[in-house]
Length: 228
Image (cartoon, rainbow, N blue to C red; front, side):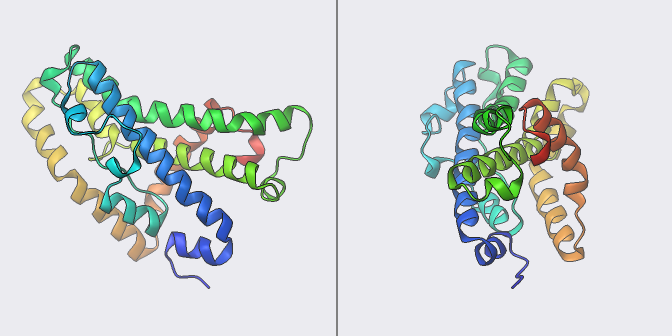
């Protein structure tokens, strides 16, 4: 039975993997947003800390719209961390560090979960997807790697509220700053529109862009070739 809804289709086909995906999404989003808040705090802006965002409590980081899209399409985002760039010790460079912190943390998390798979590969064990699916622990590790790499790749896109849109701020000339700020304001509507258009027309627009990024991230996190 195909519903066109990501999590329901997984639930009907493979309930255990569906549960693992839900857990992995919560973990990936939580560490991603925590990293933004933590780095912002270290850079001198305590806005996120005052709002309770320097925490690993998922309830503080899950975004309704982003979570809904995760369940619907298998990709989404967390609640954006508020940052006052004027408080950052290193200005635009500090803002860049805050912006990429979530992506870097997701890649590090993916690398950690590739370790047991890498060990199996090193001793000559079968690490094909079908083989890993027979071991719940390794299946969970594979799902954690997949979700963290996907979230990192997705957030690299320069479309608000994704991190890539803020990371490019360091390259925006001062004279274009008002237009850039307006782009950040209306960007989320654009992103949701792209999602809805892709779902309506059944076009994998985002996948076409994200897949090459995922391939690079899979390589740098040492995910074995058989699982890329």
